[in-house]
Image 1 (spheres, rainbow, N blue to C red):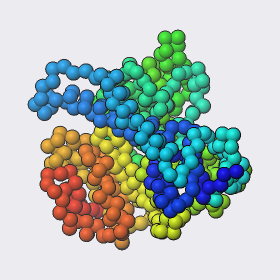
Image 2: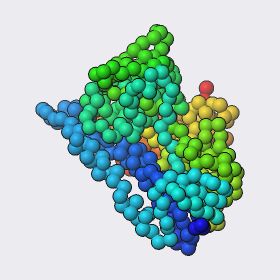
Image 3: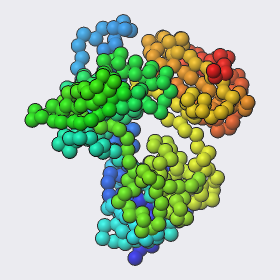
Image 4: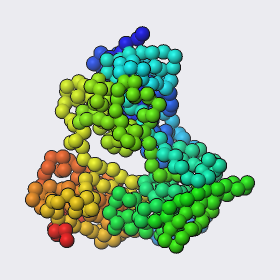
Length: 456
C-alpha cells in the first residue's frame, strides 16, 4: 500500500494554491479527482458564466447605442461564437497538465471513498495518508417536483451545453444563479420567466436591495414571479414545458421551451463513505469543521463548499490558506475571523460585505446607517447606469463598519475596499478622510458617511 503525507480529494480552487506549498515542503501528495479538474468554478461556474455575462452586456450595450448617440442599425447575437468564446475561457487543460506532472504528486483520475480514517480507495487501489483533505465541492440540488423525472430540465452545467438560444427560458429559483442566467439569456434574445417561492428575489438580501434588483430585471423584459410555489412540471411531445405553481391568485401555469432549476446546491459528501472514517456531517450533508477546518477526526480536513462554511471561489481559496496555516504552523488564520463578502454578477452587479440591514437590526447593536441611490452619483449618471443603491452600516459604539451593500455600476469591485478596514477594525472616520479619484462611483462613499443616522 502506498502511503502519502497528504491525500487531497477533489481539485477545487484551493488546490492550486496549497499543493505547490506541500510539495515545496517535501511532502508526498496523492491528488484525486474523478471529475473535471478545477471543480465548479472553472468548469461550470465563475469562469464560463462571467464570460457569458460579458457577451450579454455587449449585446445589451449595442441595443442601448442610441442612448449614447451611437446608431447601430442592425446587429445579431452569434450564439455559436458566444459559446466558443466561453469554452475557450474555461479550457482547463493547462492546470490539469500542471497538476498531473508536478513533482511529488501522484494524480489519480478516479473517484475515491474512505475505507478507514487513514485509508482511501481510489479505483481498485487502496492508499493511506497521514493527513487527508476533502475538497469535493457541491452539485445542483435536484428538487422533487411532481413530473420532474419526465422533463428534460437543465441545471447550471447542462445550460452551458446549449447550441441555440432558448425561445423561452423558465427558471425556478430567484437567487444568484437564476438571476444571472435570466439576464444573460434575456440579453441574448430569450423570453425569460423567473419563479421564486419566497416573497422576494434574493431572499437573503434586504427587501429594498431585492426590489431594486427585481426592477433591473423587469426593466429588461424579464417576468419575475415571487411568492410562487412550483407544484408540478410536464413536457409535451414538442418539447414545450409547462410549469404549474401556486401564488396568492391560486393555481397558475407558465409554458416555456426550456426549464432551468436553480434552487440550491448539495455537498458532494454522500459517496465518500465518511462514516467509515468516523467523520461527522450536519443534517444537510455538509462536513462539520472547526476553526482550523479540521473535522472531528483530527487528521482529516474539509475545505471549500463541501464544509458549508462558504459557497464561493474566494472562500474556497481562503479555506486553503487556513488549512495551510494550521498544517504548516506558518500562520494563524481561522475560519471565525473571515468576513462574509461576495458579489452577484447581474448587470449592474451586487457587492456585499458583512451584515445586511436586517441582520444589523437583529444584532442588538447601536447601528448607524446611510444610503445613497446610484441615481444621485455623478459618475453613474455620466455612464447612464443609475440603477441601484449603496447602503452602509456602522457600529456607533466602536465606529467600525459592520456591513456594506452596493448594488450598482462597479459594485463588485468597490465592495473590496471595505474589507481591509473591517479586518483592521478601523474607524469609519479614518475612511472618511480618504481622498478618492474623481470622477468615479467610489469617490462619493466617504461623503455618504456624513449622512449616517441611527436605525429607526
